[in-house]
Length: 396
Image (tube, rainbow, N blue to C red; front, side, top):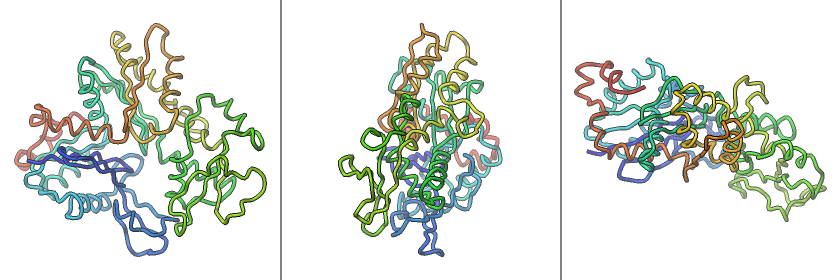
């Protein structure tokens, strides 16, 4: 009996059998400017010769799965003969869903997994629960951990105790990778080049040059300096998709500080954008979102929990999700928490080697654990009793 683990994110689907390695695949469909009629699914993205003006069709809106037609096509592609060649009748699936998911979405998912694909058994679980499982597996002596999952649609802060989530401590910030990329698009369009249609390219820019500043105001001052003194300025070469397939940062020594480049490349000059964009994770109010930043949300979450547990949470903070990849993110979070948390409590923030696949790895461990059989819902059971079995079994 094979187990397929699918961490079904709003941007990346992390998928693989529990005996094998993980594949990270875009969880969406694309249309390119050149071939308007053809729709590309998931990893067919690589077949698109010219990804400028790439149009995304996403199954998720605001973090919840709403577009089932797109999701079905992506899953058909993933489970099909081109990719994982799933034998549904003897495969069990572990699949993730967001916190506080709507019942209607859960029921649609049950129906699709059991009635359309006819998986032998399924386990529907939150991404954070898999992350926590992975963490407890690594540190068996720990009883509590706080998962900070910062993904495409939003950022969740979720406390876990003995692998059970404490619902009263869950906090959500509506700031995620999508918002950061869109904000960067707006800033660049306003300041230098119209890039509102270039989601793909600007997302790449964000990943390549943005970082989390340790001292925001100091970096702001440096970013306003002229010429050589501005150590933060970077020139980003935009791809033209004929000779330059992928954008890149010009090395410092090749930068022309005054005047134009002789080469015909298209350049984006970025200074304070590099750190002002990820800063929204810490101060969403900068762009008018009236919410706490991540450090305050963590403290707010922990303070709502029993006092004797609080020190354990501050010592076991786990960062997952794509935004954890910004350089400086962990250090800044730890520094800000240090100033908010009472001085006698130690603070420790753990950033896994691969924060994007951390939860998937947790799912892989879970699939091999002795409790796994107890947690899943079998197809026969579902066919007999309907959605109620899933409601009772899955801790959602």
